Image 1: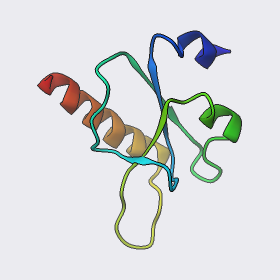
Image 2 (image 1 turned 180 degrees about the vertical axis):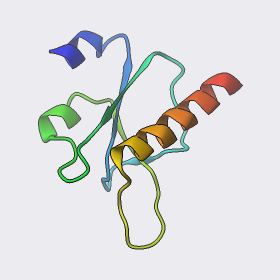
Image 3 (image 1 turned 30 degrees about the vertical axis):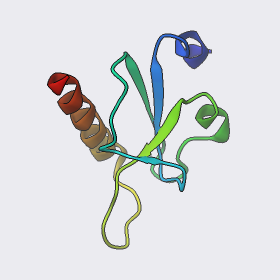
Length: 87
């Protein structure tokens, strides 16, 4: 119910490893934004992903395909803020 309240007023982004994910550094819409970060082992469930406007991923090198959730949040929020301040 929380996300449904904000679907019209905010851009909702899921941070998840997915073939359909947009790269982290792609342009963010200039509107209020909500981020969802999943559990490191199971990620976000399909019911939450359906409520998001987009899925973003942080490209990784090597064999790892995900970051610790706190590291992912730091990278995602940093990039969003960097773009927001440039606009």
